[in-house]
Image: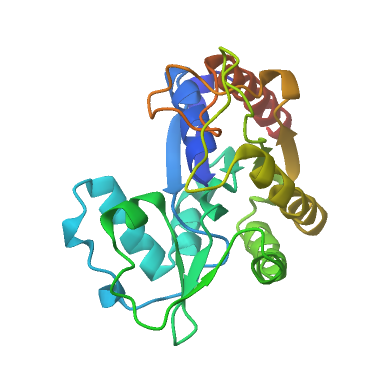
Length: 249
């Protein structure tokens, strides 16, 4: 079946986004794109006025933060599920942790939010840092419900978890920069138990980027970062996703 008959949906961010760009160039359609929602905050409904989004210039950034406030992952995936051939899941949006409000609702902490000072006015919010025992334990505890959601939407067998380590170096051999104070070695150490728990609890297929392809791009559209890879990495991922879609069909 030709690629242009296929649809990819996303629960994730940078890695999936850039891979989808390759797939889109090959004729794939894009279904749901659930970005800037942690596994912890998805489903958590914070008040719409908790964050002042008016100062955000990008309509996309404003929209995804509003969607995180609403915790609308399930409804958006449900709408796209019947036409979705592959659901890509990556955990890049987990890297900055979540903020727990006094009422227990959770918000995904984002780079755009930090840059814009979105969280400065939050009173009594508590940070659950990625990699901490509390964050991991609560994240792992959310996996059974996520698995049940995927099964209910008939997406479990069509989901690929993209396991992509942060690159230590770029294509020219230079060390990659940190991201909000976190470097690649630290992020990769923290991520190990998240990937292991995700695979064990959900049973979804894991697509691991080979070490030899895990290099940051020197001319990436969105600038230098340890999770902005060289072009060949995305082409490799797109090839494997296409094979996976053919198997699922």
